[in-house]
Length: 274
Image 1 (cartoon, rainbow, N blue to C red):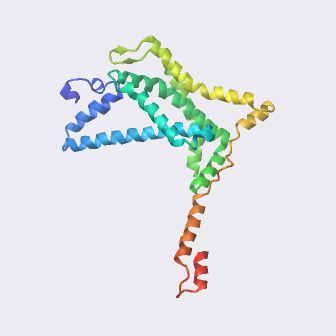
Image 2 (tube, rainbow, N blue to C red):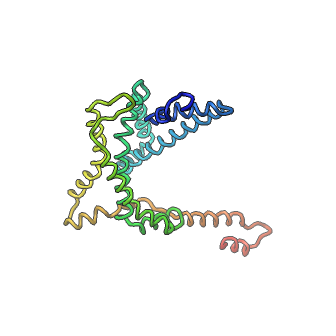
């Protein structure tokens, strides 16, 4: 493509990821045999990938609200899900306008990169260092039926350090200068607004931690111990998959070995004890 257009590779690709997806890849696929078939497969892949990413993001938001307000939202989950989807729909309409690519690039820069790194760093520190790898591994064994190996436990222990390093390096490289896409430079106020979006998601974690620390009862040490202790849901009980499989297998074998005219009770008892 660089040879055909007589342009350098960096100018063919551009600075925007959308150029790669909607311009470079389709042009490359057009040079292949059965181009229409491969183009159809490529764009179907993009649609399914986008739907899958949307599902995970929406489900994370819905689960957080339902866990925080179970009395209100659990019985009205379908209505709440519909409301969230409608809000997502109208909120995303500006991204399909003529200036939508600038909005997407702005949100990708200020609403995702640094904020997601900070949230993931806090999650890793909370789970791996405060909650503990051993307790987390026991939870996995209870839910999935197997205990994680040494490799995964070592990776989980080192992950907070690695992610914290990446987060600090990302902060070091950021600046208050406005974004530039091609020949267009964003206004200066967009940089301030972008940092405001970043801080709303970043500062919410320490603010809520300080808030719950202030409303907790007891001494400073007792408050700290209370806050780092995981909350337990007394209304639910997790059953290991191995237990479910064993009970299900016993039930099936019991039904299959039900006594009839040609079987004896002894055979039934042996089948049950299997």
